Amino acid sequence: MTSPRPTTTLWRPTGPKELDLVRELDWRAWPPRLPEQPIFYPVLNEDYAIRIARDWNVRHDGAGFVTRFEVDAEFVARYPVQRAGGETILELWVPAEELDEFNAHIVGRIEVVHEFR
Image (cartoon, rainbow, N blue to C red; front, side, top):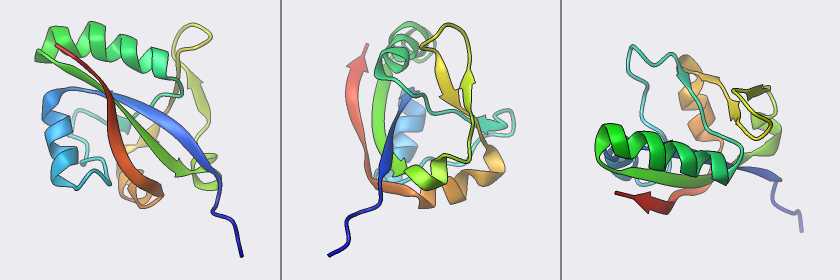
């Protein structure tokens, strides 16, 4: 019996509009980026995602959510970790044109793990 492929856990802070689109995609994919969004950036730790959802999304959208999801580890390794600030402010930058391929490597469903209003 072969074991499942290893996965990497990622988090994504999001507002209500993006979350509605994820729901429409049956919690299995991220929606296409808008023209002014050239990258999709999941983050590498829950605390950073919480800070963005709570401190930015709530202020701008009235609500913020933290999602968690798994991606095939071998695939996601192609994206170098980007340090967007302090030691724990780590992101992956997925070009918008690669999002369909990224979505194809999500393992399981995207789940909401925190909600802020």
